[in-house]
Length: 239
Image (cartoon, rainbow, N blue to C red; front, side):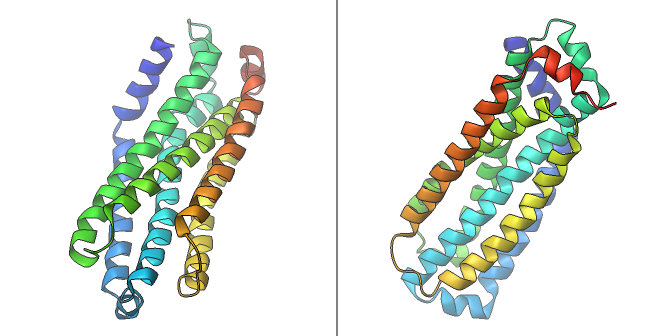
């Protein structure tokens, strides 16, 4: 697996597109956060400590979900989908790569890509928080990081397994990008409808959602991953 993992690291982290996407998305999200924190109507919402905590927690959680999906998308665009579409994966498998090690390496690097995007985003948020939300507990961000990490693992396992199992891999590219907009829109609706009327522990709700989502995708990833073998991968290379 060392050879496969080293290959994925070189193809992902030593190529400019991974960082270009990260910089672009980080700039976009930073601008969005700045606009939120300086908006007068939002400042009124944040005047209440309890409401502010719910609002900030939900906002950071939704944006963090989007960040890991963008990290995964950058990895898909850089390695997994092009290699499947071009048939290069068949060349790699015929030159010593083992398919199960390839799958595990793809999963790990995809997960790590999402974690890097997430860590950078939370660092940017922490910097902005110091100026605009000094009373927001730092521990809240660490809790969100743990929750999102579990979701990231499940989603990475699912996507990497499915790409190697199906022929029309472009579908995963479309679904990944679509999910970013769905998360953004759905999260915005959720925040606007719950922030002032939410009763209960927001972290319990997010933990429950994270566990269900993470376990669900991880289970699907294991299911599809069991059927990944060299013959299946070669036969599902797009013509």
